[in-house]
Length: 346
Ligand SMILES: C[S@@+](CC[C@H](N)C(=O)[O-])C[C@H]1O[C@@H](n2cnc3c(N)ncnc32)[C@H](O)[C@@H]1O
Image (cartoon, rainbow, N blue to C red; front, top):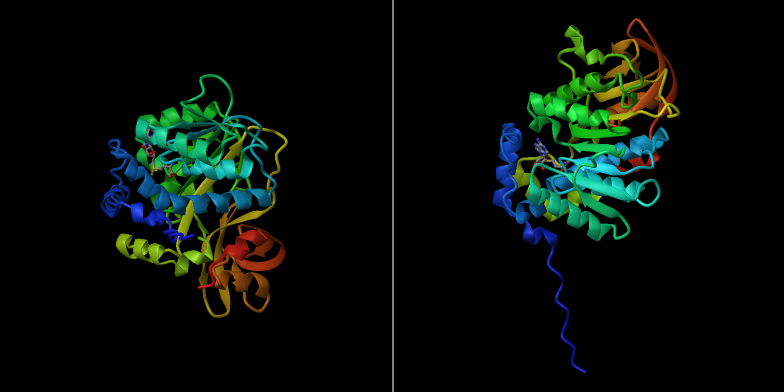
């Protein structure tokens, strides 16, 4: 019997609308994205989902990996992805927790096109999950916020704070830029009286970044894409076309939870960003209950941590003792082996 060779199915990248992507990127960069709804057709959301959305998915995976490290899981209630766009946050969250801790996902956006897209993609991907459009009117939920704070004006931010107060837990993942981090810090300030601050902070106090002399700093960390991305020609094209460094995935995040019995990171220090490297030592910014600190980590005395800092593998949390700007003892380095495995070598 003659059989025709099967033609390979076209790569999803063949669907990418590059013009739409550069329009979106321009809005995100000049911070005009909040002004009006920019999803004009479904292909905009599809192109975003494959590219910018995928990069955001990697950030969410990184954050969920960190949360697994400290044993955090969401409460067993409905999840609401607010400002869902193509629905990346809800899908990554569902990949990890749907069916085990929750079974209903709500999606909401100012764009009805985005709501429909996110709803459909989540239903296709998770047939057992109940996916609904809209904000649940009365029942409790876990609120997911992703790359949306910078698009809100003051009034909208206040409305979002009010909505967040209705949540049982809030997981917010934003770009690791100065502006986005500062917005997130103010969001934390507005809500820390209502919730336990789970991560990245090790304390419940006012964010020390708000102190005047800490104004140059911002709370950011680095996620990593999977290593295959660096040898993929489509991602190489995306990087060139958008002027994006694929290796850099800065992220700011915040996890709040109302439950009393959740694990806290008391006594630990959250490491921020990347170290400043010198030949005999590194300086790394750490956030702890007493405020921000930047102790000197000696290559000779603390080779394990120094090596990680030199390789840009900043562990999320450490338990250390420092005095007069010098690292004295490192008792614990809390990091995920999965995160370390995903690290790009270059
Ligand atoms: C950069 S996109 C992020 C989408 C998605 N959360 C993600 O992480 O990929 C920002 C989203 O927020 C939505 N948005 C902006 N202002 C909003 C508002 N006031 N209410 C609801 N959604 C809003 C936009 O329509 C857009 O879908």
